Image 1 (cartoon, rainbow, N blue to C red):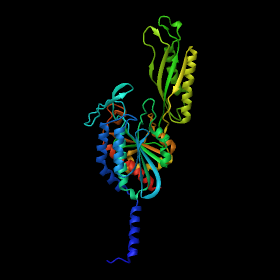
Image 2 (image 1 turned 90 degrees about the horizontal axis):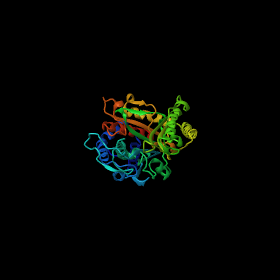
Image 3 (image 1 turned 30 degrees about the vertical axis):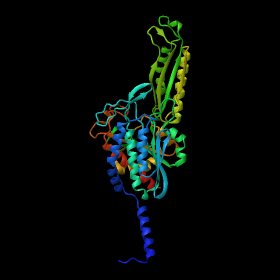
Image 4 (image 1 turned 180 degrees about the vertical axis):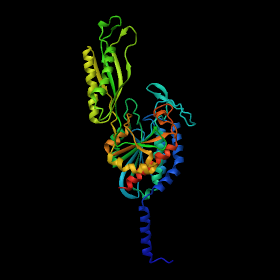
Amino acid sequence: MKCMPAGLCVLLAAVWATAAAAAPIEHEQLQQLVSAELPSVIAWRRDIHQHPELGNRETRTAALVAAHLRKLGLKVETGVAHTGVVALLQGGLPGKTVAVRADMDALPVTEKTDVPFRSHVTTSYRGETVGVMHACGHDTHTAMLMGLAEELTRMRERLPGQVLFIFQPAEEGAPAGEEGGAQLMLKEGLFERYRPQAVFGMHVWSGMNVGEIGYRAGPLLAAADTFTLRVQGRQSHGSQPWHSVDPIVTAAQIITALQTVVSRNVNLTENPAVVSVGAIRGGNRSNIIPSQVEMQGTVRTYSDAQREQVLTAIRRIASHTGEANGATATVEFEDPHYPVTYNDPKLTAQALPSLRLAAGAAQVREVPLVTASEDFSFFARKVPGFFFFVGVTPKGQDADAAPTNHSDYFYVDESGLAVGLAAMTQVVVDYLQGS
């Protein structure tokens, strides 16, 4: 059939093209993209897993990520917070800017899993030769975010707004004497340059089976503080303790008294807390009472007010117990500490339908507070954030008995990556289309 006047044909063609571009991206289309992308995601994950790198040393991983993002035609920044990589995807329609973060670093752990792509990498860590392993799943996070970047690039003309992909180094902490991680990325002005309105993150989790997704509004992961407590006494012969001010006895009393911080100072009906001493050093002979004992420990809390209460109580107990024994006890808390990972309630409510659509409503459940910590918390203190867990323990296996994240036997059932990728894709697209 002959078209109407040429000018009108051109105009209608432009209108139809605009309408097609503006058509909402449907769930079924996202599922197809996830299925198409999954083989690449698994291949990237295995490559990264076999070549793990510690915090602020993720040079190979960063190069792999940057090359992929450039191939997609994205605007890429490298060398952010030492080895971080960020890229911006500009959608074809106006809208908000959302950030999605994955961590890249591994742990000083010698791998014992029986997989063909297991790590045999060793490196120097704190003066010792150690194995290196992706024992927390950051290899999967990096691979899934690479896949997400490719998926969204394929549909960029129909995508409202912008997506900031953050590949972060040193989530597990920077080497001694260095800055790193999310805090350094922010210090270098990452969010000032790109100004996201929200930030999303996820974490694979051994405590849930494949197919399951865990979330919680409000506090999710604990704030983490590390302390060093030194007790200074007076040295003497072990056979003549009356000449000493015994720092070992004093340290023992302090450790016992610290148990009352949680049991007697914290209102446990509001939030739990943890105070643990994990290391103690003092003396080197059976017959010498030393002059000093040093302890190290960790604190976990779920609000700024609770954190201040617990830290104040630790200082008070240490100081007064030391004084009562004629010794001096001082406490130092490391800086920086990891804040509480807090899920913005409004953003959580907005993301929940997307998670249920991606994984099935029965597979998405609220989880209890987690005493581990995450430096995603720094991002989520700047803009509203939402962080969720993705199960990676094989179906049919008792997830509670599975080797935990950070174990040398930590195992990822890679079918869980399809769920994680689908969930994050749905969350991001729905957020932007709801702008």
